[in-house]
Length: 173
Image (tube, rainbow, N blue to C red; front, side, top):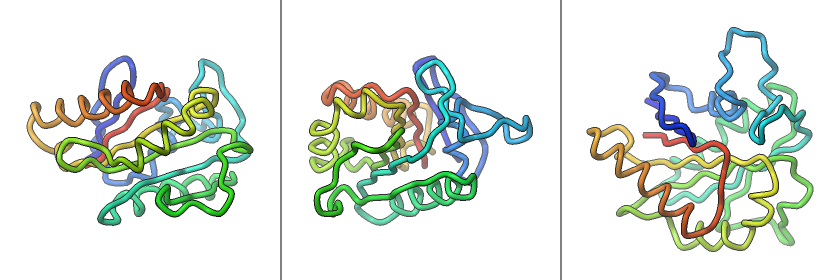
């Protein structure tokens, strides 16, 4: 089950394929309306993307698998994507040169990691300047209404602490 949220509130999608995150980040387009999912209206108008970054932080590997799955969907749409582990970025890594950025991370004990906090804080100006999205992986997202609300609250607290304002936020269980 995938729970998607944005500034207008959350919607629940009953789907098992997190690769559809790309389409959801493209503005919630349906898979049958013929719209090119590479046209991303994250900042109020469509933008044809040339290169997208997916940066992830994982503890047990699930967030990495989701990031790779999303990357596969992007590549199949004919776009360039680079996937990095924020704990082991390539030498000399910079988010410059990307047209959009998706960041993914897991929640453990009600918090995102210090490494994620450092990565986002270090690159917050670039993240806020580009179309960006954030997905968080948490078992709470599949739980009760209270647990789902907690998962959303953890995201909002993290974003408030970092000053990042991604256009799209998604929670995966």
